[in-house]
Length: 381
Image (cartoon, rainbow, N blue to C red; front, side, top):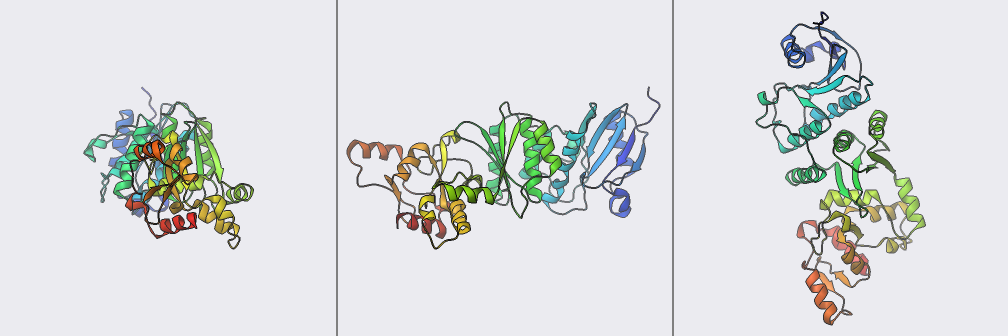
């Protein structure tokens, strides 16, 4: 038996604020963590001043390193509670030590950590490789990792429908069957993007693309996060900036914009044709109501204004390939109230076919607003 007891390294400036953290990083807590992982109750401990590692406790024993994520009970808010964990998980992935594992240790929680959103993030953490030490003492359910992309998308959308503020990262598939991740770079958004990528890397068999949607002058994820995502060789990172999109808009009468797709996912949810309810993502495209070519001809607008209209969430619909083509050719049209109409040029068997293949008679009311009505008017003006 190894005579050297397990050793704790308490990180993230815990020793700097002893009054703030001493209430929950007690000897009893450390002893319980130690016993659950190593089977031993005696341990040594020291404090290490190191920032930007999340709320992290390291336990070293028998040449192995055990990362233990400990929630910071001093923070308020759902995003603040989770924001530090992806940072610690990234540090874990970057650790060259071959003998390592990562855990989560629950502490008494004053709020409600059993919501569907919390459950979703716990499951993402489990999919990313985190084991939970004492779930049964704090949660009425077990935490199971996701096993399929479709499961993640369905639960993500279910959470979004319950709380419209859950809107930072989205997943879909392109026409060539590539898994596409759209994530933002600011605050808690970037951490959810990182956590989602780490989780997906463990269940995807094919290579995916991560489109980084920059905001507040941030054009990328943190360097350690990018390094880990790149090292896993499962996800290609694609930079998207307004400069790049502005340049494409200058050169073309169409715009393949990651920001536009992100905005449609944010407003409309998963890909589903607005005219026929086809929900096969590989067949669904983002269609502009006010076409980009028409926007470009508005000489009174600046280039930035044209880009704003071309990527606006209210200037788009999900349409299947057939209905997108029919819409572009104005064989199917919309009136200002969002009602679907057929061109007078269509008659006979063609009209019968279109009527049968277009079961919707109008856009869903929840997605119609004054901006949508304005874009429809501009389309036909």
